[in-house]
Length: 135
Image (cartoon, rainbow, N blue to C red; front, top):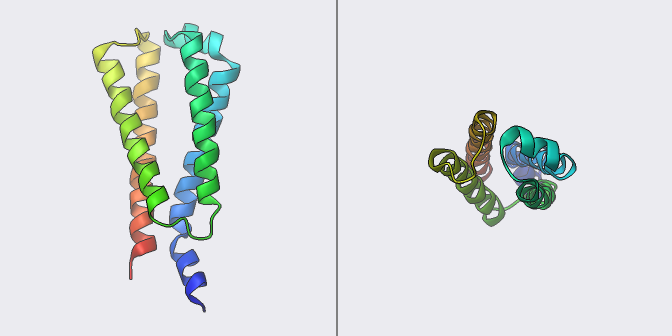
């Protein structure tokens, strides 16, 4: 077994966590882009804001997917993804708590549910990074 194979095997959990994040995030972004009007009515957010968030999430999901596709995602990339996921989680909670976006009750519940999912991705990625870097 070569060093590359060992590293790739150790990074498998991390790649799976990144892949799951990529698929969910990209899918969510695509839904925001396609259904911005109806989603905005339901969530209490403006359609233009949802389109912007959707474009960001779609691009971010693709970037995370490209990182996940690497045999060894390395350390800096996953750390950036983890930091972004933590920032998204905190920002979502802050948006609900402050009422900054004027979300409906459904929108607030959706934002918190997303925050919990993103926090779970961050935790899985932290675990995966630790496993990948363990001796």
